[in-house]
Length: 479
Image 1 (cartoon, rainbow, N blue to C red):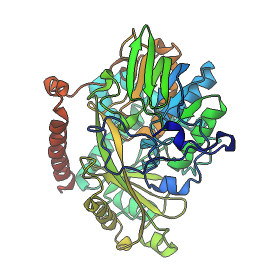
Image 2 (image 1 turned 45 degrees about the vertical axis):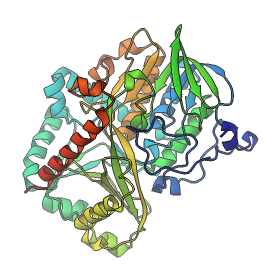
Image 3 (image 1 turned 180 degrees about the vertical axis):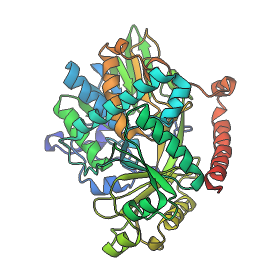
Image 4 (image 1 turned 45 degrees about the horizontal axis):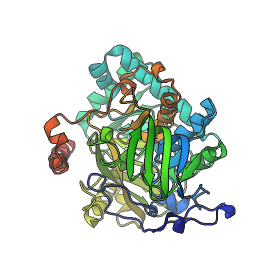
């Protein structure tokens, strides 16, 4: 199909319409691209965000640009915003499907003061005290970056912090130790609540055996935030081109030739911001360096005042539990309950109702008063997890002007804003200022290098993931 077939009249200021339906079975490990011009997943965020803002339509001819950004989600758009605001660079953003089509409109809308999957104590073990303290400062600065970016975006913010709920009594000593470390070493005011306090003052989760409260945390409407970023980036001079997947990439004499269905984009620098929708065929530098995993999410009909009271929903702050395969949940501004957790292993299996039913069962176990409640929205999406559980914002080869920001591990709502700022620094030639390990090293391969280089690695990776999920589930649910 010709790329212009999906383009509405640009003079009307409308968004580019989809030319293909949403693909519920898409899998980044087996699909060569995320598609072209596909519609949004049927998420709560898309269903309640209003009409998508105007964009710049698909690429329709060969063009020359200074900076091309691949991916129009939170990271791609905030990179474009920071490039324009801090360096006067107007980026060209390429999107395979619709604007903010991937992770950015399929997450749980929880902005936490975190980056990657590791705790502060694990940062100390891996990087040493000095870098751990610097990483904490990076996250705190990231929260300030995020707050500044959303200050003029109507994205239904729910501030106040993050409640980390112990789902078993044996977890409480671990939380108490971590909270003490946060207070005394990182000067971050984490507090511990016992089970009675959690249930009487915060949330009536029947599994709650206590909790750690962090002072930073904001719930947002992911669709409204994505659309707000899109408007802001374009107002600053960036162009955003949906239905323009990168189907081929060559670099000659320092120029990157990005092949899209409508034409070649010749770019002097490229930033990759494709998250959990990163194809193994996009570029050799990214092949097998991410483990995409699925996360399911459901949103109920609006709760009555009696149901809210019965569930003890006394806070609208963002909440997660302490399972490895954790649940993330909160009471939304319109009094719906949103809850999510890990899902199927493969895209082919993702549409099976068993995963939705499992999540509904988890919700009903936590909140028995909601048994049988109507579910208005149910979806799933891919999360980009690095093999060492920490993100990278990096230039992998100093001889090539290629940069990426990837591997947030489910903590990208907030940190994508900071990653966009750091990626803009790299692209603008200021990368020498970035000295933390997440800026100075590549996304790692898995441990078994020979398997990684093999074309047959994906099945092995999925087999290992199935084994790990069973092991995690066993450890999560034991007394």
